[in-house]
Image 1 (tube, rainbow, N blue to C red):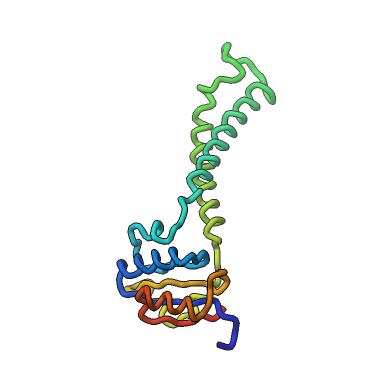
Image 2 (tube, rainbow, N blue to C red; image 1 turned 135 degrees about the horizontal axis):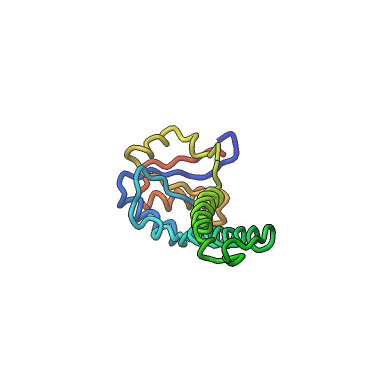
Length: 177
């Protein structure tokens, strides 16, 4: 190949094939690899050895921040910035601050979830070397792919190709970066 290699891509025909191939690649110790599927494959993330996402924790932090922001906003405006006693009501009461805090909790949770998902997924990504593969559109229709990147410490062209062949890869091609 003329340019630096990105890695190897192997084609699989069924979801069961890619599931078992993912287990074999995971067990071989590869860290920089991915599966491309036209539909969700139940249990594939476990077969790939992926950890649970931290997006729910980011969402929780966003919600807590929104709630605290709402309570602080109402406290600041009622008790510090413009303290007026109206009808004997206190300067601050959580009961009066709840609607604002509730709405800010929802808003901050939504923003934190979306931003956290985008950042953790590395999006937006305007280019990826896998898109150079001539049959990648089949990954949106009826084929399954495993991509092992050349930057992986265990990557060796011959050994990685042999692993993918042993796993049942039908067509194995080298990708350009």
